[in-house]
Amino acid sequence: MAGKRTLVDGGTVVLMDAEGTILDGGAVLIQGDRIAALLEPDAHRPADAQVIDATGRLVIPGLVNTHGHAAMSLLRGLADDLPLMTWLNNYILPAEAALVAPDFVYWGTLLSSAEMLKSGTTTFADMYYFRDQVAQATIDAGIRAVSGPIVIGCPAPDFPTPKASLAAAAAFMERYQDHPTLVPSVSAHALYTTPLPAVEAAFQLAKAHDAVFQIHTLEDPSENATAREATGMGVVEALDSIGVLRPGTVLAHGIYLSDEDMERIAAGGAGIAHNPQSNMKLGIPKAAPVTAALAAGIPVGLGTDGPASNNALDMFGAMDAAARIQKFHLGDPATLPAETIFRMATMGGAQALNLHDEIGSLEPGKRADIVLLDMQRPGLTPLYSVYSHLVYAVRGSDVDTVIVNGRIVVRDRRILTVDEGAVMEHARGFGDRVREVMDGFQ
Ligand SMILES: [Zn+2]
Image 1 (spheres, rainbow, N blue to C red):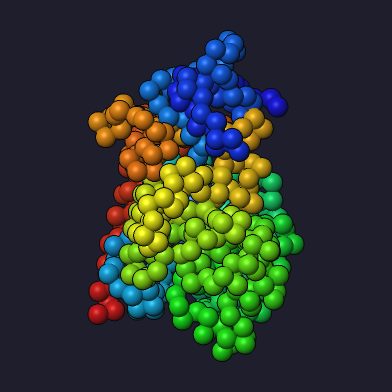
Image 2 (tube, protein in one colour):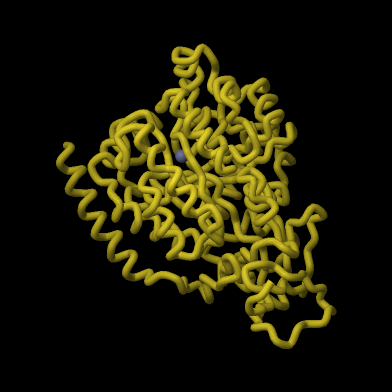
């Protein structure tokens, strides 16, 4: 492939290939938008490549955030410390109905994209309204995004009905079919908010475009009862009945999955997005059965969930929380060791999104989505185990350089693609509007 060559040289390169290779003092050769080669420490270096000195740095695959609602960064901290359904029905849904518009979504998504890039996320799956503004913001930021049309059974800020949303959706799917960073996806909010026929119509659109399908699944214990009333089936059985559980479908949360549900999911090939920080903050008294899901062969990725329910978008925090919640819940410090957690945040997420041939590891032929971490810091010195540090010690603020699709988007902790000051100025402006609207509710 044509394109300029860049060499990330001299760091400790964590490939996340099947063998778990680590090249101490190795190099990654990038050509255009893809990884051309991994070079051993003593291998010949091409003379014509632009060099990024990675001495003292960890070089890792870009992190994959498998679930979120990026534009909700403009609602972060608006309402916290509440049960899920109170938070959703009394605060978030009314605030969204009053405020969410194309410019709100564009700037909120741009703000979150900057936050995610600066903390090492190079791909995120998004579920939100105003698909065109989400897409444009992610393209402007230079982050890879899995995003697109959404259906929900109540009037949404962008479309009054699922039917109207889907009527306009095919054009979006076609427009971005071969886009280098915007991976088109279709979402249905959840079976408790959206009738099964509308979920099926959304899924069929995703299937027709061989696209990722996203749906919230069993975040709350009431969801099975609600589904049984409406369909005579539990949530996962209902989704199975319309063919949803195939590779490329991402079930967000999956906290209340039964063994039978996991058998169905494993047989179908769908993935799970695990969001431990959001789940814990909402006081959900149960950890998603991640250890069991992995044992069943289900692809499990990590997610932050939206910035209004987490409230951070730092995948290093998600990794740390995923390890701790599972060990705590099972009373077993050996469950989900650090390497397994880091794999979930990279290849696991790529597999859940059915993008494992393109991203998730540093291997020749894959997209050049690469993150450099500055390890010359008090909290990271000395270094005995790369994976232990990655999961338990590194924070998003240790990210130094980020490359997405072969393009340097963060360098020396500065984002190069967007004017961060201008984005925050817009965010403060939206904050004033949010305050006015919420004052009017009380
Ligand atoms: Zn969510």
